[in-house]
Length: 333
Ligand SMILES: C[S@@+](CC[C@H](N)C(=O)[O-])C[C@H]1O[C@@H](n2cnc3c(N)ncnc32)[C@H](O)[C@@H]1O
Figure (cartoon, rainbow, N blue to C red):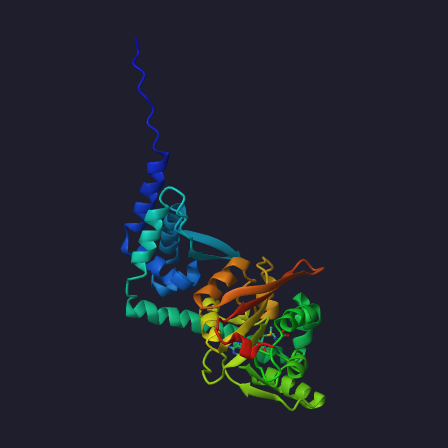
């Protein structure tokens, strides 16, 4: 007579063990800390931790298997971000607690310094592109989506917000200034910030030709200029050129006056990696939820949104994020 040994199922405890194993390593915990408000490719993380690519790939695989990081393909590169804990799932409470504790960790100074290096490398790629691209700007823009394709939608959202006549606007990254006449008609004063002298010159010529007397053009890095606040801050197709879009949203939210709005026009997430080379894009669009999450973290409330499908397969999102203010009736009609 043979004894039947009861099968013991370990499925749930396997998942928990994977979570504990992934969290049981100081380097992996610091990787989770680094991914708190950014996503990085494996090469970038290897640079940040001054380690080999294959070692970093191994750590990321362990974190991914435990459901602690999620991946996103950006052309040929894979970017890693933190996965959000799902409290209703087994292990979700432990996952949330682990991230909460990880956020208390101080980043080693050398890791912080190398993150800055990676950000600077991303920014240099974007700046170089616009220095070289000014002459063929319109053609480059039209490869994916030009202003004519999203202008009416942005204006529809803008007009629905019904800003007061004395309200002000700030456009970040106006490019050749195609949207400035629309803003100049709707706001008492418009400031436009661009960090590319060549692009700013195109915008200047357009403003002069249109005789816009209420537009001030400034050569500045929008993320380092803290002197301006406006009722409406507009970013048309600019966020995907920023090295750290979540941080950029936070900084730009500070430029919005209480009761005002941040208006973002962006590509939805896509996988056309040629856009990096051809259009200087650092990010291949954005997930709608990511924008909302970053806005919330920046103290803004998601409001109006419009989505535009283009014939070339790209999709555009026009998003409004409001800055709360008890005096909002003063800035809106
Ligand atoms: C793709 S163009 C968009 C132009 C225009 N908004 C449009 O919709 O046609 C991106 C613009 O953002 C500018 N830009 C990129 N990074 C910037 C930064 N950190 N500060 C200011 N302008 C920036 C570039 O120089 C460029 O003019």
